[in-house]
Length: 590
Image (cartoon, rainbow, N blue to C red; front, top):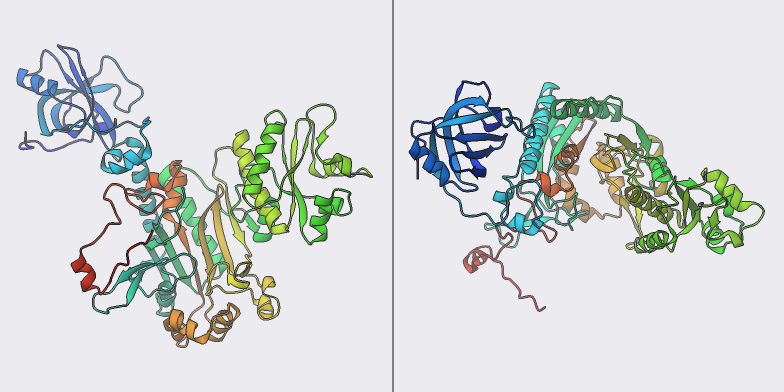
């Protein structure tokens, strides 16, 4: 095997330019074309590809060495940049090649289990088992480098705006809320556990109390919850907190960051201020508190038209305090056939609705699934209210209002994807005025929609005891193309009000002390007004790179069962380690 002795890299592969210039490059063999008296090797590094050329003028030993190379060998090559005869516009260096004068084979490689190419059909499980090979693909390298640029832009922006980067502990006290904590057993304190932080929430509030009035951290967070495309058990949050700030101050800082990061990373101009919707507006128009506003198909309420109609499904839903609402798919009659509508009916039943009614307008007269129950021009009034025209399809759901809205919100997205009507673009929207509480049907209790440290609007405090559903929080989310990017709020700093909020959530004094005692105690020593947010770095990278999953912007991701296929984590540990931690594993009876 050769060594690097006497060679020092001068250029990255895709940054090789200047005809007549002597360069030294290093990388992996992407492809070899051996034509007998000519050999071309595509050499790849994280910047791209450059062609190495070997011909009759090449030293015979070097030529023979080039002939012995195989895919994924690690090479260093020294040579002179020259114009390429057969140009390749598909790559950055397609007009030049390197006339090689010295070649070193630094490492040989076995034939990889799959071809290292962006257009791969290899199943993801195999690629994740060999993630170090998968990460050689340029599409993943570009994603991870874009993620790095986002992180740098964030640090630059917040440092320039007076924020102090501080670290909070990775092993903390367990205070499980929504998701489960990941627990870390203590060797010193047998039977006791640390938890990995779901967020740095309480610590960043303590930093405000400590006087560090502008905090920023790229914080690692951990949640033991079921995974999906936009969720991983460990993730990075751009975490921020500000003292002596209100909602508008925080929104202004965040919008400045969004404008900066899109300019730095994608050279895109995002203009502030960004659009806003209240929670109520978002739910009623889009059926979601993270609406995709790149297309219309907004939800339309027809409850007043059908409350006394002859169609029992509609009439009874309104009588029971629910509502009847619709979405209209413009020009979709040819795509949304009766068969397709039947599939959509099964879909909505699967997500909690009782069924789906429709009006489909193909011929001169619309076909209405419930027309025989309607009278007094009610069908015509529905068509007028919904703005239907020939070629359209209207889809209706009748149920409790929360079910109706959430079902049509999901259906709206499914239909839009089926019709391929979602345009490219960057549609940001702030969601504000969240309810403080949401009612949990299973437990029969009111729970905090964000977290118990969120400040309620001043004029809503009076309803804490009498009507929790009326309490509005000083909370805000930022949504991009239907994905929640950040969540934040103004925090409670009044000791007595915080105690009252805990009581409203049904927490006993013992529970308050056990979970939040140190924070509540800190409030007694003077807390400046403050608020903040946590922005998902991974989600932002996924959206900005156009990736389909967080796995595509995470170097070593977990799969759906929270395992990491390459290393085999989680794994069994030695009995000695367990004994040292005073832990005994109970065999699974299944």
